[in-house]
Image (cartoon, rainbow, N blue to C red; front, side):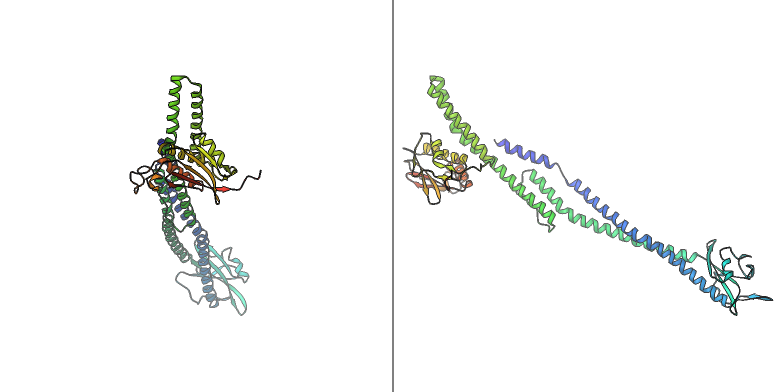
Length: 445
């Protein structure tokens, strides 16, 4: 029977596996990567349009400055028939000015001999802008006495606009890199902080697989992880109860089966020597009782409690006693909410204890005790051991001299308490054990 609990522990360990920390670390790294990628995408979504807008702003600002210089220079420019063209005004070191007559021919300054095709519309009184060869171009009309006399063409390299745009992009790239680095650091710390409780749960699961059912996860303050820890603790408690039940079943089954097996062996040996038909019938009856005992123990060990109607206590008592003791029923129809298998095992233990350790006639009395049904199993013997020693297992009751009185009474008391009842020693002389069971109302049928 002990191999059953050992195999359960091995099966649990096999399902947990050698270690789950490696995939958990991989998940943590994947989370960090996803957060960093999301940060990069968010920065790109906002930074690219900003960089484009900044570049356009620098170009527009440079052209506005060039147009303002050209307007100031045109105000001081004189173009007229019979007099040379003159240019007086603020001219920067990078700005080139040229004066053109109304035919589009250059008459003073620097520039092409003919006004550029895109700027020729300035001959009709408008202001025109353009680019050529990396230069910003602007053409403004020259006016004298409210009459256009020519066109002033100004050009300036776009170097400063490109440098300012490049500087802006460089600053934005540096800031973006710093933001991504900070995001990576925060994501890694947060992932480690969130993964630490999960790693503890994994370690606890591995300890649980190794048979440590006392393992409990600490509270983290994260509802989802705390829920996992509570579920693991509940599983550990159930597994501990299961293993304890299997171990108890191993000991209890061996104890409960020893007596009927010995009786069956004696009857079979008697049959072999005498070939008696009555002995054969007795052996078959013993075999039936043994089979029912095994079935009851298996059902109780696996926690299978039938949800049937209340049990007729007197009927179960007569079935178990089967002529080996006197049965007295003070009242008919006494029913109790108890498992028939548990009641049979408790009565079997009490009857065996009376037959082994008691003397004289064994009497079983079924009576009503307030809101309970009482079953008294009495013999004519006397006990000197304290009650703690009677219901303690051998070697497990420290305060009882000589250890416990056996595993049978301990089993009977545990079964009674599991059914909501009580089993106690009523009187040591004559020896009387009383089983109290929760009474049920009579069956309406």
